[in-house]
Image 1 (cartoon, rainbow, N blue to C red):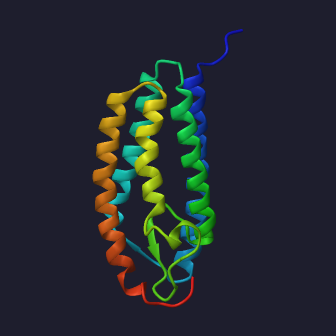
Image 2: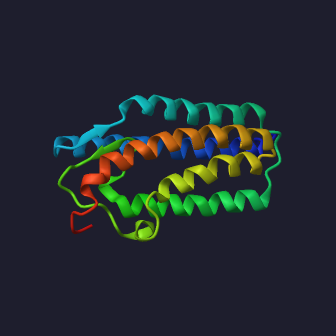
Length: 170
């Protein structure tokens, strides 16, 4: 019996991780909205979802098979950063820009030093996984497309959070 291609195993694991995160995000979003949260920049969300789906699909279709150990190790370190972000935000983490107007901003974990650590992780993991799979052009293309979408999202999020920057707590 032939073993599955290592690249496709990695891609399937990443896809499973993303699907699990979407379930957590939906639960958190519903809870926050019930508490009076407001969603901002709804129009950019389908673009982000489409970009990430296209990235994973393109990787699955093009991955040559071998997986670069150093790039994969870097990708795994980025996943540790992702877990740190999710743990730091806890029930406030969602894939949408959803804010509770009276809540203080989270200032623990990586948020003590970086305003948008989740976006830093995503900006790096998209090209790093492509590089781990030996796809430098996909790293460049999807990395650039993601950077453009993240710039759009960060502008929306910064506007949404501007009034909460002075609220104590978090």
